[in-house]
Amino acid sequence: MRTVFKKMDTNHDGMLTLLELQEGFLKMGVKAPAEEARAVFANADMDGGGTLTYNEWATATVDK
Image (cartoon, rainbow, N blue to C red; front, side, top):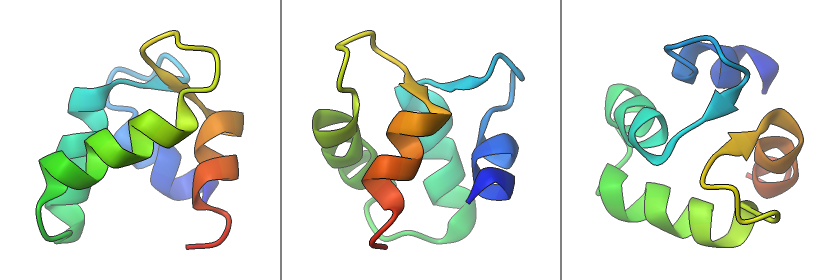
């Protein structure tokens, strides 16, 4: 999971923006990457900061 997070974090700031997540999903071949990214953000951005930390990402994707 950490490897995927680091690959998506293209500016290497330790957080994922919605755009980074969308681009990452697109590269992974996820159907409807924009919609999927918005859904993940809606459920995972627990602090409402507009970015996903690794902990938020891991919590959101642990069952996937």
